[in-house]
Length: 406
Image (cartoon, rainbow, N blue to C red; front, side, top):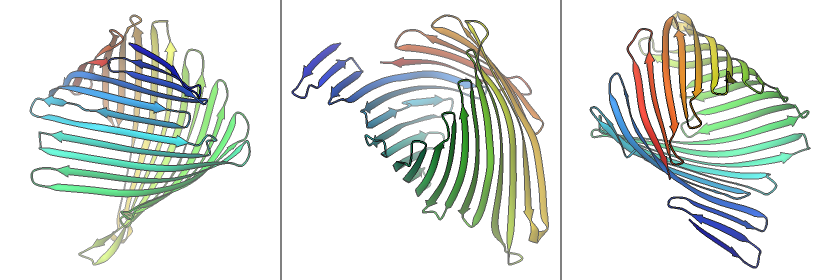
């Protein structure tokens, strides 16, 4: 460990701490704070299911730099090799983000670049993806309660696939413009409304309108939102609209959340019937309705914590081709119930038991799982997990992992 302290004529002061794989730089100059931090580590993992086993080593390195107006972060991680019974895979990824805002927070600029490379020996295929994005945001306060927010964003996505017999590349450039109006009616009540237009170079356009309401107190957090979306792509038209609402109650020992949502999607497309030499109109209408309840963080004792959730829903669909006299409909119900009990064995280890039961259109599944975590030291953490499907099949999965941080 090394510590260096220096000053200059501007009365700036920096403290530099150096460790083996960690560098922390803190500087205070002209009332501006700048800090950079390195972090590195690796995960060692083995696991499998009832069909195959695997093992992998995944090192990573992270760098973050922040000032009062600027932040930058970069992540590099690479599964050096993931070995399965009959094949292996490798790859790496890099995620980079940068943001800047003016001192008054009226103007902000954000950018990002993500790169992923994956190779699978099973089919000898390489996949390379690149994502770029750049956004400009402007906040215009009209008063202490009313704020106008404008945003322009450019996105470029590229996906390249290479194999022995073929090579393909998919590129897409997207432009997004949005406007949001935020009105703080009182300290507890906030209203918002917004519109967004998205256009791609693949002749796809999407227009979105939304409205929201939020009421917050010490114990309750209530929200309601509505939206409508118009899309046009590949000769098809789609309309989607819906709403969602939630209310959360926070106590000293647990949080209880109730929520409901409903969405309707109407997809209209046209196809040419070659045998009839006419264009047919096809309509696909889908409606999803769902309600849920969740409780988290309920402390039974100092060592035992309980969480549970449940959701029920219905999916309805209609397919119609009027000119051909074709019409069909379908609907099914579904639900999912989960429960989780965490037992803190000590200050450094915990055992979590989870149970999940779900049913979709009459097909039921029930799974039980156990997770053990152990904090071995400041640098080492270990975990072990096993899950078993106990309804109709013999499906199971498991893993043992160790995480090391420099």
